[in-house]
Length: 42
Image (tube, rainbow, N blue to C red):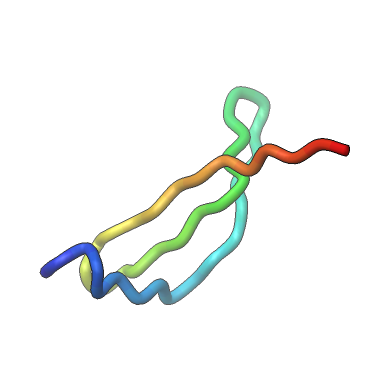
Protein backbone atom coordinates (compact mmCIF):
# COMPACT_ATOMS: atom_id res chain seq x y z
CA UNK A 1 0.00 0.00 0.00
CA UNK A 2 1.31 3.42 -0.95
CA UNK A 3 1.37 5.94 1.91
CA UNK A 4 -0.44 8.49 -0.32
CA UNK A 5 -3.58 6.36 0.02
CA UNK A 6 -3.66 6.33 3.82
CA UNK A 7 -7.27 6.71 5.00
CA UNK A 8 -7.55 7.03 8.79
CA UNK A 9 -10.34 5.22 10.63
CA UNK A 10 -9.86 7.29 13.78
CA UNK A 11 -8.09 10.58 14.53
CA UNK A 12 -7.28 12.08 17.91
CA UNK A 13 -4.47 12.76 20.36
CA UNK A 14 -2.66 10.79 23.06
CA UNK A 15 -1.51 12.12 26.42
CA UNK A 16 0.10 10.23 29.27
CA UNK A 17 2.55 11.03 32.06
CA UNK A 18 5.49 10.33 29.76
CA UNK A 19 4.19 11.05 26.24
CA UNK A 20 2.19 13.79 24.57
CA UNK A 21 1.24 13.26 20.91
CA UNK A 22 -0.82 16.08 19.38
CA UNK A 23 -2.14 14.18 16.36
CA UNK A 24 -2.64 10.43 16.01
CA UNK A 25 -4.40 8.91 12.99
CA UNK A 26 -4.97 5.15 12.81
CA UNK A 27 -6.09 2.65 10.22
CA UNK A 28 -6.65 -0.64 12.05
CA UNK A 29 -7.21 -2.69 8.89
CA UNK A 30 -3.85 -1.82 7.31
CA UNK A 31 -2.13 -1.31 10.70
CA UNK A 32 -0.76 2.04 9.51
CA UNK A 33 -0.53 5.08 11.75
CA UNK A 34 0.44 8.72 11.50
CA UNK A 35 1.69 10.82 14.40
CA UNK A 36 2.31 14.55 14.44
CA UNK A 37 3.10 17.55 16.58
CA UNK A 38 1.49 20.98 16.36
CA UNK A 39 3.39 24.19 17.13
CA UNK A 40 1.78 27.59 17.22
CA UNK A 41 2.34 31.01 18.69
CA UNK A 42 1.08 34.56 18.68
